[in-house]
Image (tube, rainbow over all chains, first blue to last red; front, side, top):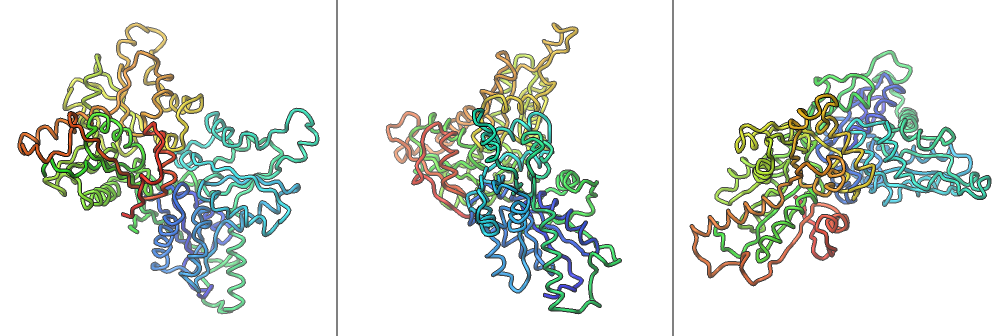
Length: 292
Length: 292
């Protein structure tokens, strides 16, 4: 696959959460065309079984491949955790990038004491993908995990902060950041110093999560790091395909890339919630309904 | 379709919520075999568009029909509201019953002042099915509606009561049951006296909802009334098919009916959450994974 092709980079998520990755990628590579598919009809993936997630992810990725993309970014932690190897095998030689490895690297780099909390969906946690990915880059890390199934619904409902959202977050995080009252000084050294948002929906709840964990915990997500991985991958491919004349533009290019959005359900809802994720008003004309 | 057939009654829901109807039906018709299908892989239906809901409901109902059922109960308000006419046309002469009309009748019968609050999913509310069904049986009724999208996730997560759940319920119900502080006596007469749980998941949150609305509001759901509709429908059909010798048993029969459960995803999760809905421990052997 030629990295200088004028084809767009394809992004896939179970719903709107991957728009946090889309946003980071559009900022980092303003010259590239981006094609985003949110499988909102079958959302959420995070409470489903592994085989179902793989099947749904394959059909969604096939749609993007059929429409023509030069690279596939799985902007969904659940789909990455369950299906990345299958996707790479199925669509080779198309480059396929996920969000788990970038997230794990961001968390490992941010932590001083190596104690890292990962918040993710039930499917991601149970599959162990983050635990393994962090162990690969930082074998001494101690990883604590929590499945926070309500967060996706909260984000899609547009409930992002306030006492209720903080209360729900506090319930999920119970016991993780509390030093026992005796021997407080020793215990504080052992408390996690980094919390990884291992689901692309969770960054929308960052304000509420910050209220719960306090100012001293690093909160990291995979959006910005994934965008860096895409830039590196395109750069590496360009060394193999130095056909710069055909380039669609890159971070240094002048051309402004175009964005298109596909959803499997309910364009009006995609526009309403998508605007929250992108931080700008979307128009219905930008979004196309597709069937998988 | 012969009502005395030994075939089971088929029940369908997007997930586990329809088990509240299943439970009422098993209690009312202990001699009947019941076959339940929860489309958990594509849950929730309530935030999806109408065409998607119709398509998913047709494929789920087809599965039950292919396996052999003598009657189809759509134990999901969202699917009933969107797809009942389509199902009746598609599977005629198979009797197809929904939960909206029973729910509307239960609410209309319970209310003294005709002011009724309906809580349901976004899709059910937007389709207007409850507003129309209540108007048919009680034209003078004033219906107030609220879409409570988080309730399904709360029920499926097993968070059924406590301050957080009450806080979420209070936010959704804001303004519905509050008398203005001046002219309190007049206003109290105008407050709704009945609240209909227009989603089969919501009865699990009944304790929390009771805390929020206080002791004087009737809280009704469609489970028991739907079971009565099934009994009446079977009775009416038996007048047309007086072939009692072949009966599989009914409320007065001696035979104990058998229950089978089908899910489109994740048997272990169905067993865990289904046990909450049924109020008894389920075994994995009772549940079969199917593909739609």
